[in-house]
Image (cartoon, rainbow, N blue to C red; front, side):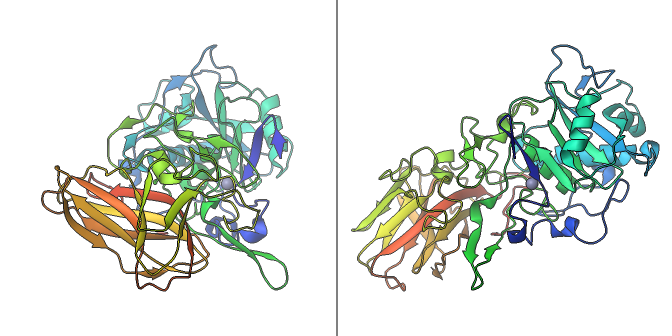
Amino acid sequence: MFDNGRRLRRGHRLGLASLLVSVLVAVSSGQPVYAANLGSEPTLPYAQPGNTSLPRAGCDTTATDPKNPPVNSPAAVQVIYAWNDSTGNQYAANVENAARVVDRVDWLLDQASDYDQHFTFSCRSTTTSTYNQYAQAMVTSEKIDTPSTDFWSIANELAAKGYDDSNRWYVVLTEFAAPSASAHWCPTSGGSGCVSIVEAWDSGVVGHEMAHLLGAGHAYMTEHVWQDSSGSWQAEQYCPDIMMCAGDWWAFDMGYRQNYDPSETSARFYVDNYPSTTTNNAAVHPLLTSPVCCDVGANNDLLTAQERTIEAQVPGTSNPTGFTTSGSGATISVTPQGSYTGVSARYFDNRRSLQFVSSPQPAEKSVMVSRRPSVTVGHNYKFYVRLRADSGTAALRMRWYNSGGTLLSTSTSSWFGLTSNWWEWSHEAVAPANAATVQISVVAPAGGSQPATLTMHVDTLQLTDCSANQNSLCRPST
Ligand SMILES: [Zn+2]
């Protein structure tokens, strides 16, 4: 659904809903969860803080009348509690719950990386001494006159009632059964229709929808899709973050590989499936404060955007910037454009990846990130990468160098069989004494079970310093 270049995205009932059976099942099945019915907060990659240690997210700017913010008011979120005749107005009972969920969304954005970054929230009042006063200042109340579970019915009614300021993005928490969880993509400006509507008051779901408001797409990047014997499309799903598994995961693109790169704000990602060519980087959204390094959270600055996702060059480009091969007969290119279901894998046709071809085997070949990122002795590093091939064997390698460029030691993972799915693999090692830099590579080992010509696709590289700070994330592979 297109509307002025902005699209409605639904958290639970996507266009490919039949493929996405594992997505958000925790919040889309069983009894609906409204308003005060909290308690289903996501706990991965680690448990969220309790209410008493949760920072307040707002108030960053003031609009006494939320429908008429001052001229030149900064871009900000307006949180709306919505009720109707069937539910009655339960604002007094639930306003603190609404504020708490929004506080958690702001917390999770900040914690997803080691950059300090926050949403900007508008409040009605500067009287915020108690939590209840703060919650009442941040969350306004609005009755929805026309009972409906249709997103646009609610969004249009809110716009007609005055929630249409171009410097406002509206986050609506409903007392009633709303259109599950939905949001409109508004990556550059707010106003009429720039709304997320959520009935499940849970920071995973609300955060997922607020990420859509920022222009973030689902993390389809790793989806393996095939037709079964009856011709029905089937898919496997991963849970890389809040954009695929908001029921379990609160973290938002902590690998800077899909929607959000606070370390390189010029980077852009393809945020949706083929044939979409929409690109975005949520880290530069006007609703967000400028990202400032470094605080606690996942430390993923060790690679550049190009080294992570190879999106700076067009499909088919030979020897893409940032990568090198070793071993005779190994070549690399940006994976050529393919069919919807072709070898570059559905959903990768407009999202770049690296294609590594080597022949003949069995002599060892490898593809490496040319640059050697700096490391700290004794810190634990984890190298992640997604790989696919119809057949073949690979391993991950970390080679440690001293400040003079002399190789000190090498750590290589066990060999593993490649699959036609984009599984994520990882290898973890501690920087040894005197190490100054590390070179990461994917190796097609001699002696592995290799085809005559190995064609391997490589993408979403990530190198994490798991010891950089409190809550540095050495997450499991997904
Ligand atoms: Zn969604």
